[in-house]
Image (cartoon, rainbow, N blue to C red; front, side, top):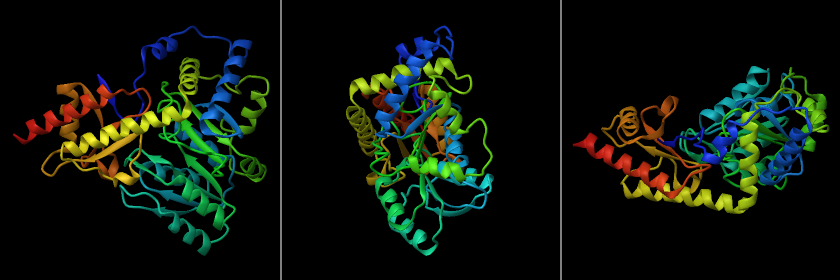
Length: 360
């Protein structure tokens, strides 16, 4: 099976073998050594000297952790949304009592930093800006550096970023861009199974933590910081996913972080070129297309759900379908983590053959 969804990603044999390893004492010396190594590698890949922690949760858990540790009910939050997961960040903040202003774009578009400037200038007092970096539901990468610059120019708002489908594949200069919280997860470009989320937490975020009144317990980052000092997690972690993530993070560092970014860009260009060669159209403009997932418009007269089903059943290629308003209108090709040229070629051939059969 050629798994080409936008996560969880397929795992190479050496990672799969680690998932079956025996359990260890998560409060013992072996785990402490592993946690120290993982923390150093996480900071290197995120380009940050800030605190960074591992949570046993989905990526959404890390997003929630960023919100509840920095904000209070009634705080004003700007939610920049270009798709399903941008919507989710705003919904999380709203669920905990924040007053959310939504800057929402048409599906397939990236956010415009000038819009961010205008909103923050016209409505001062925003406590935080929340947004996705790579929106996997639409295959769009936001211009994160430019957006962060706009936020800092116009406000003192914290910047909380959902980097679940971008980190380790698309550059994020966390400290240089002034990103306060980066949330990501193991099952994407990090090449590990689901179960572990990661979060970075800046000095500004810690200052906000002192005043934050949203309820928190499991996701209280102060507990993670306290236990990290003794080489332990505050709660029992998902050890099989930890083993795999430790290996894969070290592999990224050994490859070279910039080389890993370049590899993802090369696979993305291969996918985009292949889509164009089939006469198909990307959902976004190519200039804002993500390097981790390619969203493709389903041709007129073709049932998108049926296309995805037949590609899977007849060719063993698992594509992502459209979500919510895009259901049946697009299909998505994931190319993050462990992906080689033949994986993309095989997916494109399967699409071409299936479309030909459906049109005949």
